[in-house]
Image (cartoon, rainbow, N blue to C red; front, side, top):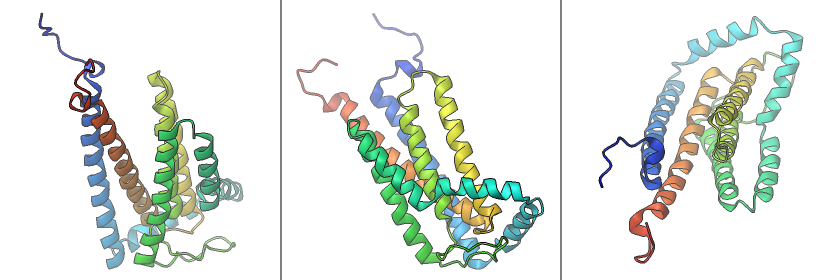
Length: 236
């Protein structure tokens, strides 16, 4: 008997659901890539100077010693050293979950390479120091903290949420990740070590890379789940 009732998302075969996510992920990655391309062009042409100056001035007018201490604490959550140490620990801890460990390792290795290549390519100087502490010696565009944080906390949230059966906990996981990523990016602007356009570009580049890794992973998952890839004597 043919069932004419409409299919829900949960009723769809795994390979079809994976294919839908793959298409949506690729579309989002293309959108983020366009944003990064536009920003990089505007930065090279100097068209973001007014925007960056207005945002920096608005933020620094409300600076307080207590808030500065908080921002200096939060910014360490996106530092290269911190993310490297935590990533290595999680990869070794997650060896029993080989797929998750490999995905995290690839994501963070690619993020480190992206940061190095993009900074060397654009060579944008840092903003004029606002607070009295030493500035990083690397270039400004894009923000390595923003890019690295997006890749690390985004990938970590995806891995954790994927193992949570309840939607409420998945939403909480993603909300925490977004807040942490946003706070790290804001701390870089507040501390005066990056322009706002640096942070936005870091998020865009990080999004492209995370979605690229996720799309490849889902493409492989789709191939494994596809009925065409099963053995002839295997039951559907």
